[in-house]
Length: 107
Image (cartoon, rainbow, N blue to C red):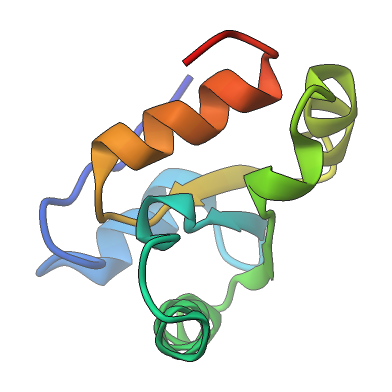
């Protein structure tokens, strides 16, 4: 497993992300830590994040965990189509709650 960690957006050295995963890779964007935002604002921010990654040569698609509640095997299958996963920042407690709902855990 390879990780690229950044405390603010893509970070100061975006080329490091490309060197870790490779140019042209498919990236799943998980933005559920921002689900409490207005839907339009959330979409705008996801699109901005996607644009930054696309400008680095990645192919992006959002994976919304809300579509996979109680369907962990379907999420696992969907994620197998990607080379890497970009988890957008926001409320980590909300993100944890979304993942718990996918796994059908009480939370």
